[in-house]
Length: 525
Image (cartoon, rainbow, N blue to C red; front, side, top):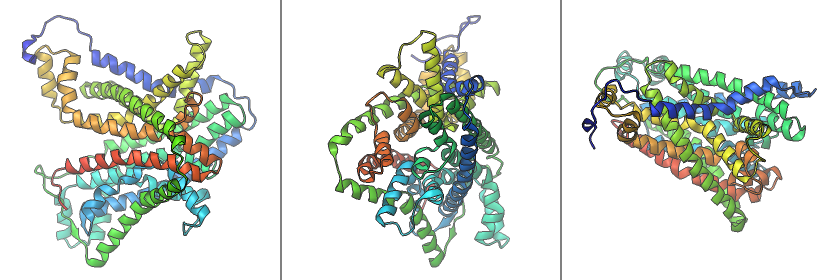
C-alpha cells in the first residue's frame, strides 16, 4: 500500500514506536557500563594491594597505548597517503588488501608470533613489551588507515593542485597541505586503535604485561576480590570514555576541508621506479607482517597437529554465538541509528554516545557490569542461579552493549542518503513511525545493514574476555579454546582454533573492503 493511501489524522496522539525502541536499546547498551561505575562507588574493595594493581595497570596501559598507537598511526597514515594520492605498482590491490589485518585479533597475532619466536622462525624475538607494541602496530594500523584514507580522499583537489602549481614537492604537499587537512580523520582512527589497545586482554596477558585489563582478571580470579575488579573496571571505563570523547570530537571536525561543488578525482603523484618499488615494498611488508606471516605459520602448525574432533564443537558454538549476537545487536543498532537520524536536538542524539560507551570499554568491563546486574536481580529474587540459559542471555547482552556502536556507525552513514524532506513528506501523508522505518529507512540503509552485520559478526567472533567470563560451563568457543591452549604454552594445539578465527574473519573483511572500494566515486587505478 502506498504512503498516500493513509491520510494524516489531525489531533491523533501517536507514540513514536521507533523512538521508544531506541530508548530501550540505549538502556540495554548503556546499563552494564553505568552499573560498573555506580557499583564501584558503592562497594568497598577492602584490599590493600588494590592501589598497586591500579598503578601498575595504568602505567602499563599508558605505555602500550602511546608506543603501540604511535606505530599504528605511522603505518596507517603513511599507507593511506600512498594508496590515495600516489601511483605505484599494485596500488589498486593494496588499497583493499591493507585492511586484511583487521581479521586477526591481537591475541591471535601474539600466539602466532610467540610460536615463531620459540621455534626460531622469526628473525627478531617478538616477546615482552616491545613484542606487544609490534603486534598492536601491525595489527591495528587498519583503523588509522581507513580513517586517514577517507580524509585524504575527501580533500579538495583544488588545494592539492594549487600547491603543486606553486612548485611544492610531493613530500612538502603531504606535510604542509594533505596531512593538516587529514589530521581530524587520523585522530579519529588513532583513538579507535588506542581504545583497542587499552581494551586488549589476550595479547597483554600472553606477553606477561600488567595492564588495566589484565588487572581486572587478576583481582577477580587470583585475589578473589570482585569489588576491586569493579573499581579497576571503572577506572578503565572512564579512560575509555575519555578516548571516546576524543574520537567524537575529531570526527566532528573532520569536515572542515573545503572543495569545489563539483567532484573531481584527486591528482595522484606518479612515483618514479625506485620510489614506486619502495612504496609497494612498504605496503607489502604491512600486509605480510600483519596477516600473511602469522596466517602461514598457523596453517603450518595446524597441518602438523590437526585434531578436527577437538574444534568442531567450539567452531559450531562460535558460529551460533556470532550470528545470533550479530542479529540481536543489529536490531538494537538500527533502532538507535534511525531514532538519532530523525532527532532534531542534541539530546535526541545522545543514544549514539550511550551506545559508544560499550564499544570504548573492554569486553571484560562490560561483562562484569552485566554480571553485577544479574547478581542484583538474583538478590532481589527475580532470577535464580546463572544457569546455561541465563549465561547465554548475559553473553548476548554483553555483545550488544559492547558492539552496538560498531553497528550504528555504518547504518548511520547509510541513512545519510535519506532526505529530511522524504521523511517529513511520509509523516505528513500519515505514515507512522514503524511504517517509515520498514518502508523507507531499512530499504535505503540495506547495503549499510549488510556491512554492519559483517562487522558485528567478525567483532563477536574475535571477542575473548567477555566470552571467557560469561560462557556457560563446558561451552567453549574458538577464542576460548585458543586462549586455553596458549595459556598452557600449548601453542601447537592453539594453532587450529586460532587459524579458524583468522580465516572466518578474513572473508567478511575482504568482502567489506571490496564493497567500500567499488562504492566510492571515481575509482581508478
